[in-house]
Length: 314
Image (tube, rainbow, N blue to C red):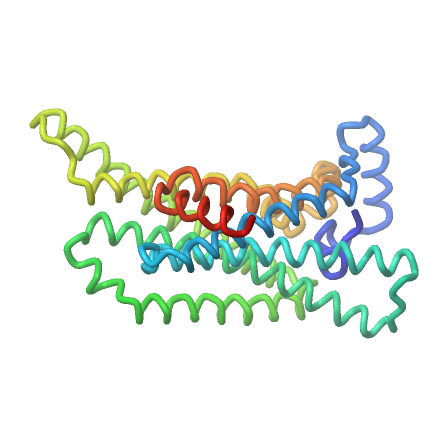
């Protein structure tokens, strides 16, 4: 699969010389250094599956009034971010296929404009997904450690302001990224944001699981049943930790790819790593496929509503 500019330029450094590329070709002769040939149909299939799944999640949250809370609104926004990944992937694939087969004829200036729009959607989904995972983690942290004050801290108005701020910041940052994609400074900012969110969420979840371990120890020593609210909050922490792990497994290789572009663009090993770019894109799309499955199987209320939505639509 060939990618549109400027995402195509993220496949390898723009300042890589032809000599370095020829060295990479020599190194790739061993076989392991040559990236896999991933068919376009796989990108389309995963994009469609992800789009349908996340649409169901959004529909279920909107349908069930019991899910009209800040936590589920944040999860809904995360599903919308995953939908952006799917929509942008499908739009890119269809756009390329139409151009390659001569069905769609456009001036180069219009093609570049379409490239920028699609890439802005992709970059917005990256930033918004990271941001909403961080927001959800903070929301869960408040639920566990400030349970009695949660509704006064996380009001609906504050939740709306938070969601609007994330979407606005994601749009602005993605626009800046697309217009300055060849700058290492922009890539460093994106990598720094990724690492900051990683550290933030790790600290929050480690603290939450430390509480969970202490809580279970107290229950076993006092032989008292756990409260439903605290038990539900801790179960939610487990769910979001799984989401976090899946996200970073799927997005980690892509950001490691960006780190190598900045740190060692001419190193033969790094150049070899660049050839797996399409595989990293598949992992990103897989993340948007896996997330809805986690929501459905770990939330009984959401699972029941999803069943109702599917039944009504049949």
